[in-house]
Amino acid sequence: MYADLLSKIILHLEESKQLKLMPLIAVIGPTASGKTSLGIALANSLSGEIISADSRQIYQHMDIGSALPTPAERKQAIHHLIDFVKPDQSFSLAEYQALANQVITQVISRHKIPILVGGTGLYINTVSQNYLLPDSQPDLQLRDELTQLANQSGYQAVHDRLSAVDPQSAANIHPHNLRYVIRALEIATHTQKPKSDQLAASLYHTFYIFIDWPRDLLYQRIEQRIDQQIKQGLIEETKSLLALYDQHLPSMSSLGYQEIGDYLRGQISLDQALVLFKQHARNYAKRQLTWFRKIKPLYSISGLHLSELITTLKTVTLDNEYLP
Image (cartoon, rainbow, N blue to C red; front, side, top):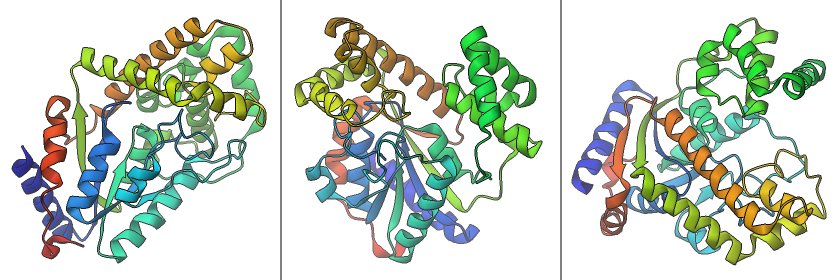
């Protein structure tokens, strides 16, 4: 398995030179699939640096709930674009794309291999597929109108409006992800083009590595991670954040913080919060799987062999001749 992966990576690096594109490796998969561990192993084996593609790990003070790489893990490999945005600070997809492109260029200038690691599909695609993102001020009136529509008629009504003008984006964005649905409608309204048409020539030649687990085992891993997060102090972390930040912020309404926040506000019991947290995490994993399986070509690694692969990667270093 390792030999096949290494040969594919070497071929990818050679193809990148022939195409005169910057090489990029993307480690993708659902939540709790083992992306961080594999990314670190690849970074060490391939002389690479990691660029996070996780929309929650950008935030400061949210280490436990976002499953931020630990200090020990960050010592094993260089990580970029984590732990740098305040929870109440706005941060757009366009800003992420610009920063990621800047970091990737810097990594390659050091003759290192950039490794994009994360589970946020829009972050992965906006970099690897070079979305053309309008860096304009938000249309607050349109956002308010669409939010009212969602409150009155349900999220599906807003999603249906997106389907009418941009069916491809609608197919890729879950109806309950209201923020992304509204943003896609905003882009289509302002540019008179669907968001899915906002593409330019790619800057990179990307090799996608997908970690694939049997569904039942993936769900076990998700539930075990949540149990561990509670033991690590997620309740206390959420309480500290709620003392400083509004519960309705995008950062505070993300997976885990929303459910634990409802518990801390006395709206539900802790048992109910954990049941909902695990259910929402499983649903999120389903949406991630749907998103990533549309990416072609995709090199899949069985999660059942992930530990063995990581152990082998620790014993091998890529020859310098293949580096950018």
